[in-house]
Image 1 (cartoon, helix red, strand yellow):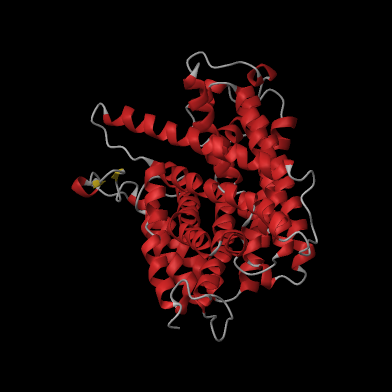
Image 2 (tube, one colour; image 1 turned 90 degrees about the vertical axis):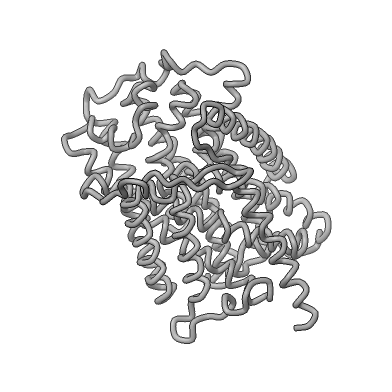
Length: 463
């Protein structure tokens, strides 16, 4: 439930419309979801070997430290805090609040406050008070779930199980409704390309890269179970099992949902939809849009809880190891949770929430995430060579093909994404519009951790 619930958040409900507008082809769109599902399974298999080998709190932070040393591990932990996990918390809670507007009108900023733009040199522009009502509600969700997990991991785990089951049930219900209600869709929609969106040549590759970014956001989170390795009863057995079963369940659900979307909505109509799942449900029955909006709120609430629950354990591990403030490495005396890490994580997530829109947050964090995903998969190869006799309760099948393919795909994806970001930035800046280079923002946030590492590294011998 933690793997599936941590992955299924907002992406499958929120991103398909944006992705349809990029590729303009329903079969290519389904192909993107399939490719990303297969790649995610490869990454999960690689992660499962490391998780069974090192079932410790901190997950990939621990794996990277053993494979590459303290600096790379620190940059990963810092990246989680600076953009990856905190950005995920902000982005998923943002979608919760966005769908809440289906039921209640949220107040918005007016006048100069609404139009305030802050310029960041070499990176771009941000509008902190745009969609103020949505951001305010999202901030409230972050604080509420932080308080729940502050009070105990058992309570947070119970919340996770309830909301994971609820959202997967809602997804299956939507797919069944599309399949059983006559006349809601046409098989021709699955193969008819857009009459307007027809990328070709380099533009086709750029469109695919952009669509991959959206799909990777929807699949992101399969590794979070590794962050709480010490808190599982049988981690060497349960970590690989939960990773593999969880990602296979998610991949199957996503392919079903994507096929249902394309069956009901022609690609041009899907490309104009901001809330695709709600539009599909509305076609199936009256009030379906509000019903799916409630399902998305359940989904994003549970996903936000999963990220908050797991991510704070990494900062806890870093604090205990002397690479973050020592306060973050102390467990609460009564609740036995990483209380300080949870509080600091919540504060920074709220600040990131006000830094940009949903798409800005997700595109930035996915770019940064994939650098470390590739490094993590390559760690399997590094440790197989360096420590051939280390106990490995689970081994990657078809080694070294699986981790090598995953790393190769990740590197190609990073290059395409960076090129796509630069092109989009130039196109926006040319007519004088505000723009943000997501890969530059992500790189700046990650490299900003270098002086912090040097500071804590210099203190280590004296301690």
